[in-house]
Length: 293
Image (cartoon, rainbow, N blue to C red; front, side, top):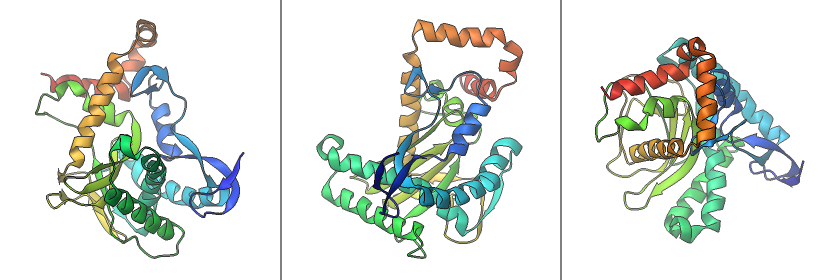
C-alpha cells in the first residue's frame, strides 16, 4: 500500500484502493448479471470490478462508507429490488451525492490539467471546477455546512416506450440499467459544467455551472429534508447530450465483439435458456427490442 497524500484530508497516510462509484453498485450489477460483466466500451474485455484508485486513507474511506450504506439501503436497493418510486431524503443523502461526484471531479481535474490542450479546457472553466472541488472537499470534511454554487440532480432512467431521433438502436434500457460510469464534462459555449454518474439507471448530475437555458423539474436533491419521485421528471439540458454519448459509446463497444467472445456469450445463453429468460438482462433486452416495433 503506497504512502501518499490522501485526496480528501490531505494528510500523508497509507492509501487504500477507493472505488469511484461505490462498490455496492458493482456488487449488485454482478449479482443480477447473466454471465460475465463486460466493458461497455469494449465487449471483448471482461471486468471483475469497477474503477478504483489509491485515493483515500482508511479514515476517509470509513467516513464515506457510512453514507454509502445509508444510500444503498434507503434509495438503491428499494428502487432496484422493490420498484419503489418515492423516496424521502435528508442531509445524509446530499453528503453521499457530494462524495460520489467529488471523487470523479478530483481525478478529472488532474487529467484536465495534464491534458488541457487535448481536452480543450480553458482557464475559466478549469478554475471554476477547481473552486467547486475545494468547496466540496471542505464540506465533506465538515469544515463547512454546505457547498456553494453546485446542484445535485437525480434522474431515474425509467422504462421508455418510444424514442425519437433514430435512437431506438442504442439499447437504452440495457445500457443504463446494466452499467455504471462517472466522469466530468463541460460545455464552454452554454456554460454548463457537470459530473454525471450512472448507477444502473439512477443517474446523478452534479452541476458546477448551470447555463441559462437549463431546466430541471422534480430532480433536485437539496441539503436538507425532502422527497423525490421517479415520475414526472423533466430535464431540458445539454446534459442530455451526455446520455446519448454514453449510449453511442456502448453501441460502438458492442459492435467490436469478436467471434470468440460472441461464441462464449451464445454458449452461456444456450446452456441455460430458462435462466436467461428470467434474468434482468433479458428483461432490458426485451424492452429495447420493443422500441423498434
